[in-house]
Length: 135
Image (cartoon, rainbow, N blue to C red):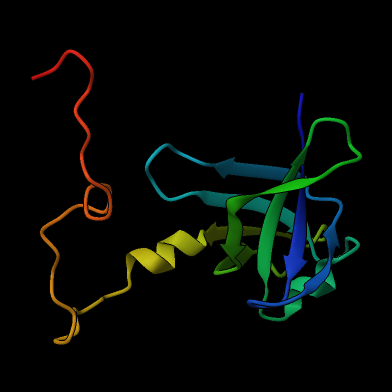
């Protein structure tokens, strides 16, 4: 069994702290697609003040509760927050797209000085050697 925890980071920066008490976490890392994170957090819980500023949320997992690991695609933007101002529990729900979501939106243009290559990277630098028994 694995444990998950949420960690707040400054945008492209250092760690702000752990968010130790989320009542719910939903994270998905689909194969060949963009990860997503949904979680709930009370504005009265420890660490809630960390999300009052622009920040990123990292999802870490552990098999033993001692060593925590963050996947390479385990960083998310704190993009959308929903909640009821009159709710006495102060529960907010967050929808967080992955960093990869931002990269999917990037537009790149080829530079005029870069000529396209017709050779693949595997065969461009080494001669092809025939296999034994092939002609």
